[in-house]
Image: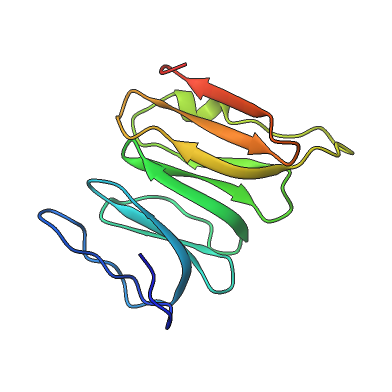
Length: 130
């Protein structure tokens, strides 16, 4: 979790060591973690991942050896799940759509999938687990 000062606190066997950055929220899986810094940019640790640190996000979920994150504008979900093809199917809203993305969740196993919640509370899932 994240303490009141914004530092990540982790414990347990095999838990990846978090960076010293300050975070608003984190999502930790068995082999890596990702967090939203105070400015909304994404940082991951424990597994190498290609991350554009200029993009701002509103939610992140770790699992399956990678992550999915909802962009701050709510119109796209970015995923990086190494050695998996289902992350290419992440949804993107059409221009002018009003039902924006709100939250995302990634299955914990490597062959799983992900689900995204829209502002109207409907859910869309993709990947081999669905």
